[in-house]
Length: 311
Ligand code: MEV
Image 1 (cartoon, rainbow, N blue to C red):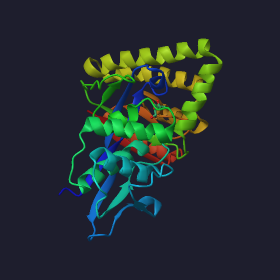
Image 2: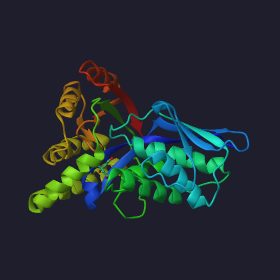
Image 3: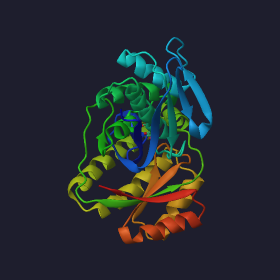
């Protein structure tokens, strides 16, 4: 039996928030940052529990009570229900390198790793399409009205050109490119940011619709560049996408500061990534400039900064 299951973090390159309104968006997995779930078999009759190591919590799982106030227990219950399986005698140990509330998909990453491990603990396999639907349902329950982009890029672990409600469209990376991801260290609650953009939209659709349309156009242009063009040409699209996100009120002083620092340190373009209001920003860099930008972000107070190559 395989005992270790995992799922990656993600970054959204283009189109966050507009994705909720059916506009295209682009996201890539960050495979070096992962949530992991390890199955420890227990003796007969010992029951089923989740040990959330980072939260120092042990959560017993039963099938009869639908504990919807706990996303981890609920995820495990839904997997057992989907697979028509009884709770195993096992402890699933969960831990994650993906910072919470940072726009890197920690919720979907942890649920995905856990769901895979629960299936493994009962000796079954959850295919990616079923898993993706299941994680999307869990995201909807706990995170408001998500588009489905986070669960899709994380479950399939491949770059995606995403349009809400449409079949998966994988994205081919023509020429690999490098990003520096900078963490403001400030929590950004995606559900709140998405809700605030909804209020803004409902209050003034004539003003907000063109912003969402333009973000969608940027994603379409970025797709062509990523697949067949020179990645440096993504830089002005990132800058413009960020300006539009600022107009949707989802930037923050901490994000503006790191974006500014990254550009001054030689990044080609930069923007917030994910729900915003804190969390992470991404900067497009030439490979040799990456450590310089990383260092500048850390010196300016970023809680973390790391380099990733999109390929
Ligand atoms: C969150 O990673 C991306 C948002 O567009 C919300 C969503 O699409 O579900 C802000």
